[in-house]
Length: 586
Image (cartoon, rainbow, N blue to C red; front, side):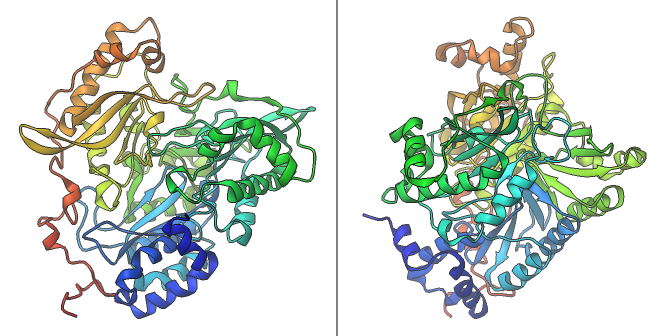
């Protein structure tokens, strides 16, 4: 039997949601019937809106897609302005203030505390400047990701930005691909560093050569969520650049027709590839979905992949890098991907003053300012903003990634952003970095949905609960040794339900063991891979330290973790279009 979501989508989905969304916005939050809210909230996702968690009724998170992470001149200024005007809630975050932007692990932007009544005007402001929330969420083509400096990078074989842009323009709002069984994630990589992260996408185009021509090999069925991670599988297909859109549409239609619509847990391309096998996917693709002869895979370039590969090369584009045209791009580290609106506005001004005004977002939640002339580089690097968003960050700061967490997300089990900020700072100040380690990834995901991509980190953290001293506390599962590169590897989960305040001590003890026991210049990833489960579990113990955690109690039971009075009864939600509480008696 089709799921509730499939029934709702059959009734109304895609572009036509917008009209009803605007009608509800005009009439106000209370105009959405109580018994229809689940259906409408599911549909609103197609236009980038997620209803926030319990206790925050009437508030939404808005996701804005930026294809390949490219923000054209003037667009970041628009983002800062709309965040400042529309993304202010009833309580400030103690670390980030009243309004801020989140850069995501899929090169998108998230704003919080959005009121339904503001959506039409907010959309108008975004769309007037070439930005859109269309299909930023929902069962459709999500934001197309890739190398954040495509077209600006000396390491690339193919400029993948025109390819990503054409995919975005072809499939966003395309009725034929608007209603898929689940989300559809696509990556295009043109460089030799592998920063497009094709391995964890439903459909990946990766640089390859055939007949002396550069094009793309095709992989399908990658993904991380729900404790069922898969690396994308090679389907033995090579396409030239001009065939990418045709091939992408064919694979999307195959998933549309054959993906599971009866069980949303299984409704991802990775499970279809599990069931069929890569060879059968290729056979069906050739027999039913393309009208030309598919070419076998060409010579891939994966042996040069350095991004998140566990060695001493970063590949994350943080730092100062020369462009092919002689200008420079500068990658800035944004701790856990969150910037206050004042800093976002200043970044937009600096990008305009020193560069072309273009800013790009990375899959590590960082930002890149492009097109800085060499003559202006020294002055740009001396700007005060770069003291907080460094192009040369400490390894523990550089490697920190965190999802939204219980601050807003109904799925999350634990607080994430503020916690990971504190983890990174405590590690920086209290733990010696082992010799030779310049890149050390710690990813904190609030639940098994894996939005922080924990399975591909040196230290993987996943939200759980446990009891400590007889009291329920927030806790984390700990995994080790994940990463991408030529030979990607998922983390081994070695510690379960570690109280959150004992995790920094565990990491310190772990790195002490690594330093003492490593074989010569063995990388941390090699060190983990060389040990079996028992050895890994015996490497280190959790430990209380001087680290102080912001929230050990169950933040899932609060209306907002950072409110002075955070009990559900203290919530002002729901509110009206002016942010005033709506009486339960109305």
